Image (cartoon, rainbow, N blue to C red; front, side, top):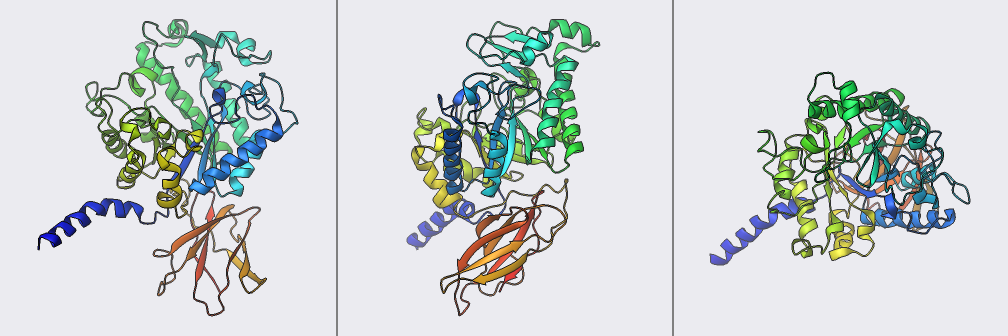
Length: 495
């Protein structure tokens, strides 16, 4: 009897973990790839295009093995460009000198999008909204950089130069840059990070008094600053959707909106700086007003952190996403940085926690290079356990809830070991990928109990793959189509 009680206790304790390890068919699994100061790509000193291409392919292949289905790629780190821009110079972190084109010449953004889509991954174009010069003492600044053309739009703060968010012309310029990207490139989303008004420097006030006196219009300075950030978010959302209604707009804010001691709606935290009070980013307003499609709060703290506990903030954001997608920013970069992060179970437990929390649709890891050396075995954990089976990004029904049509299936037998299967999209809307499911015995016409075994990219509406061929039909498969909005078709049997 005692042994039975112990067994039941163990089973109950394992239920949350077992639930987490069950197949997750719809989940956003992304990684940030940072270019600023050579954080992730290209490595410092690698200014040869062919070497950059080779390096990037290795990065994507690693993440594909780990089960990642989206990349958040930084293409505009400091009012510069990782693509040929009519408005901003080539980035110094791409070529060694701002304004210098790549040699041999190529378009890194076009290349990166194609490589991501080839692997069935989404491409979210990550732009820094207001940082103009990364280091006033060291940065390379081209003659055609906007800070030299319109110096009146910019303010120095610490060792950096920023757009003045209160300057209306500066706002319009940023919108124009983003419009250009959405117009010319097949991005799945535009992604902004947490740097709106800069993080406070102790003893220094952000020097925007001149524009406040000109445009303040009777508001307090704090409310005026928030209204400046609100206005560019509205402008960006409107511009993006006007060009391509399928392109999403996401924000990755600092993990604390507001502390509870400042606002009853805030979280039970004691963060030294917050979005609302210090960065002037009212994320909750943007979610409520439908100005953004997803939020990715950076929850880089451990469980039971005394000032900003992971579990407290996870629960808080799950209750404040207002029907939009919420992807949790996780911090593999913190591996072994303190006693808590030497715990090999830290990241897996955080994944388990977010999967067991309502209104959370996935996660993003910061940053790519954190996985290079398999810290604490976490790359293995993703590849072998948590992301062992592929998942597609959940659909956003407020975009479009119409299913694409079933794919057309054509099979060519090439040997006694494998069939080549050709899938063709039959829908009028663009199809991004196909999903191959292995069917359990007795499964009806759907895929609810089926196992997803492969994501097949749809290149020009067509996908190809091989499956084992068994003459007696011991294995059965079905396939679905996924469109730009991540809507999934009804399954088509592979006979």
